[in-house]
View 1 (spheres, helix red, strand yellow):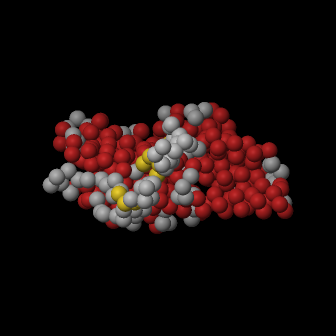
View 2 (cartoon, one colour):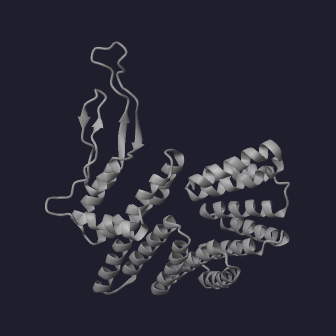
View 3 (cartoon, rainbow, N blue to C red):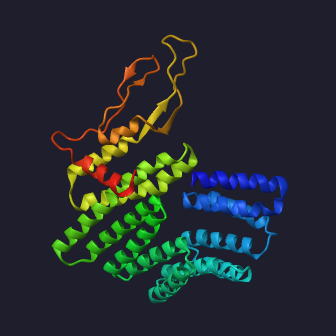
Length: 352
C-alpha cells in the first residue's frame, strides 16, 4: 500500500504538471489506498476531488462511482450504494471494460447480503465468480470467493463457507498477497466462532473454538509483523487500527471462550510491548528551561524491539544521559515457552 501511494502521488504530480484532466485517475487510486488502509474520511475527500475533475470519459467516472459505492455500503447507506454500483456497472460497460463491470456486480451482491437477501446474493456472487474466473481476473476471483464465504456464513453453512474462504486464501497466496492471506484467516476464525455459538454439542463447540484460535492468533501475529513494511506515519497507524487490532480482538475472543488464561497473559504482554512512550529528553537537573511537563507521544517500536515478541536479547538502548539500558521484552511465564510456538507458526504460515 505504501508503494502504491507513492506511485499514485507521482502520477498525480505528473498529471497536474502536464495533463491535469488525467488527475482524476490518480485521485481515484489514492482514494482506494486510503479505503483499503482504513481511512474512509480521506478516501471520500479524494473521491470528491476525482469527481470534480471528471472529464476523461465513462471509465474514470465509473471507477469513482464504484469506490463511492463501497464507502456508502460500509456506512450502511445501502440504497445509495446500490445506485452507485449500478451507475458504475453501466459506465464500465459503456467504456468497454467488462471485467470491471463484473466487480461492480459483486458490489451489488454485497448490497443484497446487507439487506439479508441471502439467496439472491449468493446466486449473483456465484454468477459473477464464474465470469471473472473465465476472464482470468485474479483480484476479482479473490473478492468473489470472499463474498461467497460471507454469504454462506450468514446462511449458517459453515463448512461451505470455509471452503470458499480457503479458495480465496489460495488465490491471494498464489499472488503473493500475504496480508490478504492473514485477513482471510481472521475471517475464517470469526466464522468458526460463529459456528461454535450455533452448535448444540459441547465437544463441537470446543473443537470450533480451538480451530478459531489456531487461525486467529498466528494471523494476528503476522499482521503485527507486517506493519513493519509500512513507513512510519498515518498509513501504518491505520493498518494497526483496522487490521492488526481487529485480528488480535478475534484471537483474544477465542482465548477467552477457551479459558486459556496463561496464553491470554502472553498475548497481552506481547501487545503491551508494541507501543512505547517516546518522551522528550529531560533537561539537565537545575536547568532554567527544563519544562514542567514535557510533551509525550506514542510511537511504534522498531528494531531491536521487534525481538521482544520472542524474548530474544537485543542491543541495549541508550538513555538521554548516554547510559545503556535493556529494551522491554515479552517474558514467558516461568516454565512456559508456549508463546514461541505461536510465533513460529506465524512465521511458517505467512513468511514474516
